[in-house]
Amino acid sequence: MSFENFIPVTGTIRNITRGSDCCSQMITIRAENGIVHFMVDSHTFIIDSRQLRTGMRVAAFYDSSLPVPLIFPPQYRAQIIAIPGRNEQVTLKHFNRNLLASDRSLQLNIADSTVVQTVNGQVFDCNPGNQNLLVYYSATTRSIPPQTTPGRIIVFC
Image 1 (tube, rainbow, N blue to C red):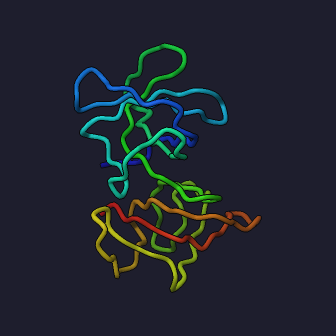
Image 2 (cartoon, helix red, strand yellow):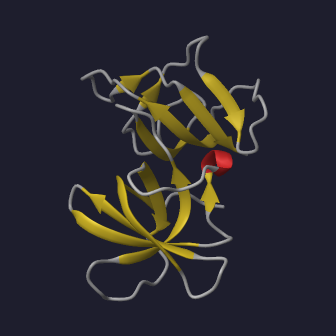
Image 3 (cartoon, rainbow, N blue to C red):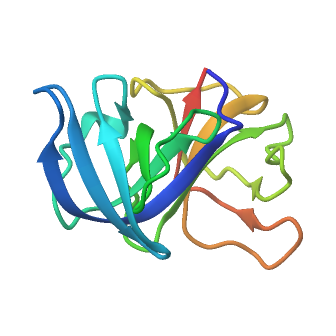
């Protein structure tokens, strides 16, 4: 799966309603730029299989290359949903062997305390470079590119 077209929307879940069948839900997220609706179905990958609840802060990723209805507020099909911790950000990018994001937006400095695992929760004890990574981090430097020591990395092998 290619993640280069995945766009994150981070905000708080305001509402959850049943979708067109019992296997889908429509979640309403209040983001910085307003309200966004996301369809969540059996194809949506929810990190750690967490139960979504009203009031929960989430980062929902959608594929910008897929067609969407021209309605307001916008409605997308969620591909991945991550639940960042307090004061934590999440990014999904391809990182090279030096752990620099392909768009040069973030440089990773892995510490002994950084949890690195696969999408199914197994320990990833190889170099996570040259992979698509979901990175949980809090503080970055003001350098170019910004650098961070992530708390958690999920490797999409």
